[in-house]
Length: 315
Image (cartoon, rainbow, N blue to C red; front, side):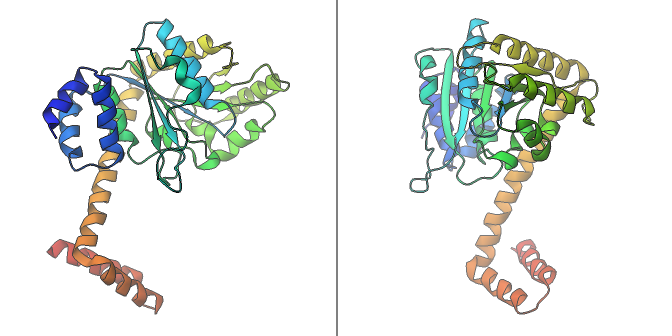
């Protein structure tokens, strides 16, 4: 593979090259290190917006509506939709979102689905690398739509500059938001399907909880927007809130702190992955099974871990 050529085409924003690079990321290709090294200097310009919420609140429809509104304002958009994995192929079950095909022929929009492959938290382990590819390709905004796994779906806050938590009337989302930790990760709330009965009550409940919540984000209090994403109603207001939050992040210095924390987590994840691979190379599964048997038989697990580390340091 001509990795420098691929990197150059990604930096030019060529869609086929971007799709190829994301596929290599998703598959953990051997060329991944070289690809990331080539793209890293060009990353850091895109605004990354995560959309999360329980299944059924309309994440895909809202993502599509936001894409349309962003395009009206002249901004290029990449959509990374993380789907649940097929138990047979390991691939994304839904593929490129059917409901987003209105944007399929728009040269200013790139849509890609990725499989979660069993990763908890609503995202794929490869998401940070895929975001770097899309960022380096020159998109103004990257929308990340998560799987929809309920209370485990909070990883997005560590990957996005702005996190939108979607709710819907009649689903108990006010209580669910408090229970699932969504109040802590939300920068903006959106009550979708606001034309349904109970929407005003859901908005009121969320606003009350935001007012009472103790947060460490300084002056910013998450606004609550009302949308009907299927018709586009309220989506312009939602995007206005996102723009205001982007400005707040920039002026408060919070954007730099969030991106530093994100980079730290990514470096740690890569190091831990390499460490696990190295442990397997040094010990093999048989040695690990032997140590596990010793622990089951009554040995100290810390002693077993020390044995692993000692062998690793001597390798």
